[in-house]
Length: 448
Ligand SMILES: [Zn+2]
Image (cartoon, rainbow, N blue to C red; front, side, top):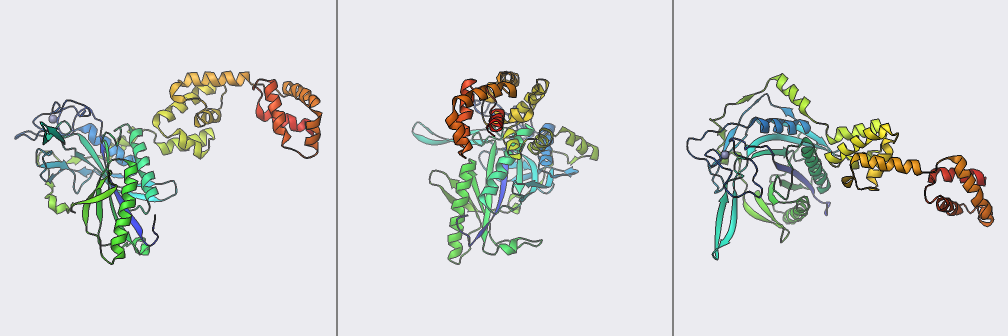
């Protein structure tokens, strides 16, 4: 970071809204983006007396799939708990969440540089409603929309394993990619279907935080309201400088929750940090605990699609593509599937996977504007147009060498750069259809 005196200790908390049809504990539609306010509600998600929640099986399964994709262990016994607090957008005055028995725990994500980021837990909860601050007839008003209330939300908590902002950025992009491959959420920061919080403290004794008995600093600051990966980076830089300055004065930063304000690029104190006990967690009495058999968990694994890492391995091993190109081809699931389909079609017409990979990577054609069939047709056309016959090229080259005796002399005198000129001549004679590699080879042979 900007100061080598301190090492940052960073952890993340990520909320991901699932794109299930219905909400977490009722049958209301979970869609709430650009929907007429308060049209997707019922007694359950409005918290009316006597309404009983029923857990959404699909959401639980998707939460477990996220856990599996993050190499977590899946709990055989799990349950929901009530997290009690008052807020206007929380109609029941409690959120149904998970406290001491999350669905998934002890996972791990390995970054490109080999750094391992531990996943503490992945649990299931419900989203709250949304307060909308508006001026009505010249007066400030707050309106509440409960369409989002009860939408399935997965919380992913990491260990405080990050030591620099670059790793944080890579981790988040990897996580978003995995979630999109699983097709369980659009993980769109702008729409709020992926939300970030970070916690951070600094130490001037990095040796104390490695090893099996790490000694962390005696304070931790949480930062909320981060709406993009870019702002998260800015919040990290700001928080680092703020905490470093306090430590430099010989003081300890206050243990608190701060909010990032993008307009001024600062974090602002919101409240002193609350403990779990402040929420008076207790088991949700209206939903029976969940028990999973070994075979249920084994069956879940079969539902996992091929993830980016597996696709990359497959691409490099089976198709002999470079790791770098494999990363580009797996950027999105759409692109990876497109490539796979093109390779399949290419096989029949003898167009190599590596050729297809390079064409996509070098953006020779915009893959989003061509179907895999159209792409392969184009590539086939190109290769049949190409003059790659050594005999045919040899005749053209003989002619060129005869007409350029001075250049040939220069080459023989050691001016090897004239080769480029000669290749250019071959291209001109063939209207660009000559195979550059073969032309080069034949030219060198004839010039010997
Ligand atoms: Zn409802």
